Structure formats: structure tokens, C-alpha cells
Amino acid sequence: MKIFIVFLLIALHLSSYDRVENGTSVYYESTHFRTVFDLSYESNTSITLAHSYLDTAELSWSQTVEVLGFKEPRNTDTKKIDIYFGNHSVARDTNNSIDTISTFIDEHSLAGYAWYYISDRTPYFVMNTKLTEDQFKVTISHEFFHTVQYAYFIDDALTDTKFYKNIWWLEATATLMEDEVYDTINDYIRFLDPFFENSHYSFELQDGSHEYAMVIFAKYIREKYGFQIIKDSLSIIETSAEDVGYFEILDNLLIQDYNSNMQVSINEFAKWVVNADVYFEEGDLYPPLKNFTPAERSVIGKGGIKVVDNLKSGWNMVTLSSSDVNSLEIDSLESIWAYQSGIWSNSIENEISNVQSSQGYWVKTSAVSSLYYTYFDNGENDISTLNEEWHLFGTTEQLSMDYFDTQNIIVWHYSEGVWYAFSNDSSISDKIEKLGYKQLNSIQAYSSYWIKKI
Image (cartoon, rainbow, N blue to C red; front, side, top):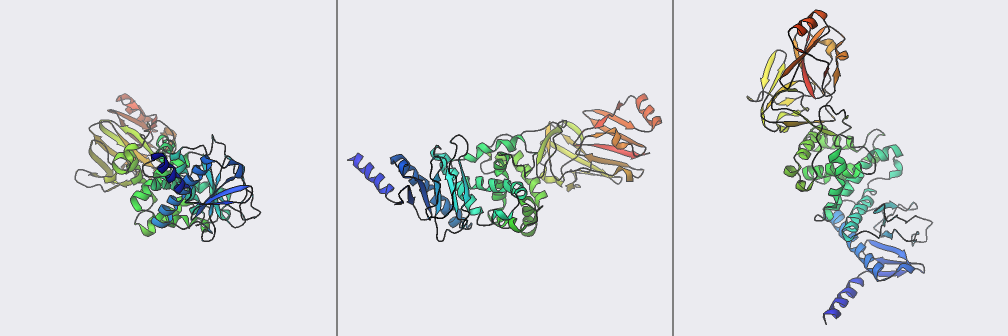
């Protein structure tokens, strides 16, 4: 009796979607989708998989369009979205159009991909049939969101350069939607390593893995600001200038609607990824963020961040990321001191509210700690305009002594309990040597220095 009930339940489930046949292909249809495969491939296995695909696709539609309010994919008021079995030979739309597509997917490469028919831009996607159940669930959610994205813009209006420059946001948000539809699967976490290992890379890097890892920034945007900013961003790319991409679009939207900007947000994003388990909803599952040594000469790309292990226990001469001083969250911080125009200020008495990467700071900690820096930190100073006062400057790049050859100056730097000095005035240089101070040969990135025109 139990076996009969099980078979009855299976039969009822399999009969919930309409079957259509055209002589060479077979289709199972739901409200918004239809699966497509060769008639010779039809079996209990393929029928079960077709129904599972449709279940997943309809759930993705419900969560994305009906719950979150994203646009319906193009032409779906009159047509269904085709889901092809990617390891089989079906390659034509059933509307007898001239559209011919390649549905083949190497089972060891792509999980799936989404595109649209050239004749009318109705979207479809192709699935690798060798995926596990969890894999095809998140893949369908991901590919469906690509079909939603196509409703906001026509990618033919974008040059290849512009498309690939901006694919990071398209893949990041599609990967984000996997977790919105299937929150407990958490498959997106396996894509995070390229970011957590190379957080200094440009957001716009396109290399086949980094753009998916940028789901971490999409997660920050969604958890901080919600989905409206994502919806608004999608519709702007088509009409934006060639050199304006999602990075600039998000910046403009943050300024316009959220009393923020990308500089402020990336500084906060840096704080979030440094302390992922504190700030992200699922941050305790994320990999550790790689910290850099000050000597590692990796340039911070557009939007990137870099965490540098450059605070020793005690006093440190460093520069700080341009931000609100309270957002820095320095471990074991005791005090920050700044000197500008002959005046000292400190954090103990709340005299420092904002810090700049072009300025130098004395930072005292009770333990070894790290600082983060972002794409917006450039730490440049024009020493050609120095007056004859002491200045405490910061730098985010390593400086050789050739940098100071524009005029006679004296430079001091303090590191791990030792003072170093340099002057291009020979008499002062001799005095420095006689007094036993170490010769300053270069100034390390992310540090600071005293400088005075002689």
C-alpha cells in the first residue's frame, strides 16, 4: 500500500506540468518556463529532471519578480523562457523561427549560461545536466537573474569594452540572487576566495572568477541598502557614457539617494570584510581575509582594499585611510596624534574626527595590529611648496630619497623604536651621521615622515 501511495504521489507531481511534442523535441511547460530536450532523450530520469528544473525556475521567478519586485524578463507576457538540457542536441526554438543556438555544455566546465533569441530577444538558458540538486538549484536562480538583467538593458547597445568592464556587477548580483532564493545552500561562499585572497584587485577585473567573488560587495550593498539600489543601477548602464560603468553609477546613486558615496561605502565595506563575522549575516562562514606586509608592492585597483600589518605594539608613524576616525576600528588602540600647522591634536580628547591618507599620524597600540587602505587613498604631497615649518606627511607608496631632491630638506622617520634621518644638505647629513642616527634610505608605503625645508 505504501509503495502504491509513493508511486501515486510521483505521478501526481509529474503530471503537474504540461507535455508538448513536435516530432523531434519534447517540452514540459510551467507557467513561465518550458524545458527542452530531444525526444530520444526522454526517460524517467529526464522527465524528473525537467520537473525539478521547472520547480526551481518558478520559485526563482516568485522570489525575484513577485517578492523582490524586479522586472519580468523580456517578452514573458506572451512567451515562456526555454530551459535547454545542455548536454544534448536540441538547438532550435519551437516557434519555427530562424533562431539557432548552441546548447552544448561541456559537463566539466560551465554549470549553465543565459542569453536570448536574436529574433525577438526572448531569453533562454542552458543547463548542465550533470549537476547535483543543490548545484542546479542555485544555477537556475543565477541564470534566471541574468534573464531579468536583460530586461533592464539591451547589451548590444554596449561595446565589448564596456560590457566586460561592467560584467563584475552583473555576475555579482546574479550570484547574490542564488542565496536569496536558496538561503540555506550557501553555494556562493565557494566563490569568495579570489576576493579574500586578493582584495586589492580592481572591482572591474574580469578573469572568470573575480567577478563572481564580487558577490561579497553585492552582499554588502544588499545588507546595507536593500535591493532598490540594485534595481536602479541595472537600468542606467545602457545610456551611460562609455567611461561610466557600474562603479560610477553606484557612486551617483549613493550620493543621490543614500547620503553616501563609493568612497564612504568602500571604507565601510573594508571594515565589514575585516570583521566579516561581526557585520555580514553569514560572515562567520567566510574565509579569512589575507593581510599584506608593508613591503608587498601590490597596487590597489579601482575599488579595492588592502589590509596591511603595519602596527607594532607601541608607537607607530603611519598614515591612515581617508575616513571617519571612528570607523577605523584599530585593535588595541590607545591613542592617535596628529600635527598640522604647528598644532597637535589627539583622539583621546576627541580632537580628531576625520583622517586623510596624505597626512601622517602617531598611533599607539598595546598589541600588533593592522590598518586597511582603499582605492581612494593616494597619500600625495607637493613638497615643492613647503614652507620652513615641520610637516607630518603620510604616504601610501614607497618613496626613495630621489623623491626629495627638489630642494634642501631634512626628513625623519621612526620605526620599531629606531629613528632614521636623511638630508640632501651635506653639512646636516654629516651631523646626522656623527650623532649616530640611522641613515634613511627609503620610506615604506603606508607610513609617515617628518619633513622640513632648510
